[in-house]
Length: 135
Image (cartoon, rainbow, N blue to C red; front, side, top):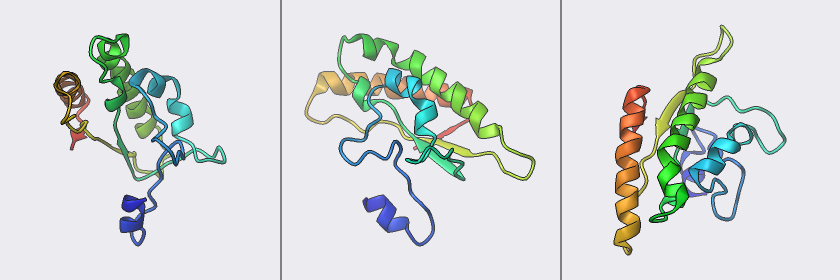
């Protein structure tokens, strides 16, 4: 709500999948499986924004879990699909700009933060490979 309110004069901010509780995106595996749904409005209309700011990471930061181990694989699949989607526009549309948000540190749990630091390194390498900016 804060970002949407702060930018309401210049942008329509949409948090997909229109979840008002906990973010709704879950771990990177879930993100990959539901990516098509995340790229649609609540009524099912496909979204085609000027900029897609995206992140997966915090829900995959469980030390020793299968999800933590598979993070880079799922994120790579997500980025492959998003880059194809972003470029697949009609002749009169510009490609969608993609911007990846690195995951914030987990300040009160070193083990989880260690996973996040490693995931951010993997994400940076992947975004560099696809020539995508990170923040």
